[in-house]
Amino acid sequence: AQSVTQLGSHVSVSEGALVLLRCNYSSSVPPYLFWYVQYPNQGLQLLLKYTSAATLVKGINGFEAEFKKSETSFHLTKPSAHMSDAAEYFCAVSEGNAGNMLTFGGGTRLMVKP
Amino acid sequence: ETGVTQTPRHLVMGMTNKKSLKCEQHLGHNAMYWYKQSAKKPLELMFVYNFKEQTENNSVPSRFSPECPNSSHLFLHLHTLQPEDSALYLCASSQAGGLYEQYFGPGTRLTVT
Image (tube, rainbow over all chains, first blue to last red; front, side):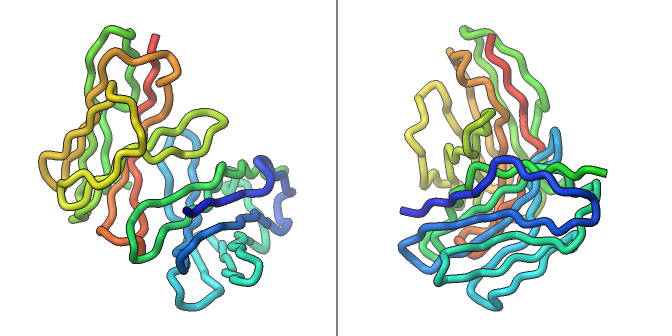
């Protein structure tokens, strides 16, 4: 069985500060990992994904994430927060080639202060 | 993003009503999904269809009945719902296989009165 834990349901940063959103996963097979963002009244949009290629993955809007197998982590970072980054962020894991079911974490709401 | 559309965007229904949610994808995908998003709960996968065949039913109550007539359309038929079924219902599509990301629609906000 696979699971995802996102530490911190709410994270607040100042504009221009580093964004760090934490994600730890559990999977019995080599995982595929995803970060999605959800803006108010919208569906989820893919930020980036890890599929066993490079461990440092770059995504849209300046976000990146690093897959660390030893730590079972896939934390999301952005060097400088922008007001438009305020949204809810979801980490998700899939079973890899064994299936296309995604298991989501509980989400982290990012607030950006001016 | 217009790759996955959902109608209606908002729905209010009584507990004795029957209604249907519709999802359509224009991305040429062969897998479609229904998710339930409730406040303060993780996103819950409800149903998965691969090549029009249901491959996953995540212990969803029978008052929710999915239908996938073709790879581009997915419906969720609702009847005798409960107030706790009020939530945002999201549809997604992808190529089949865990490697591929899912593309989400904007959701239907359902309120059961």
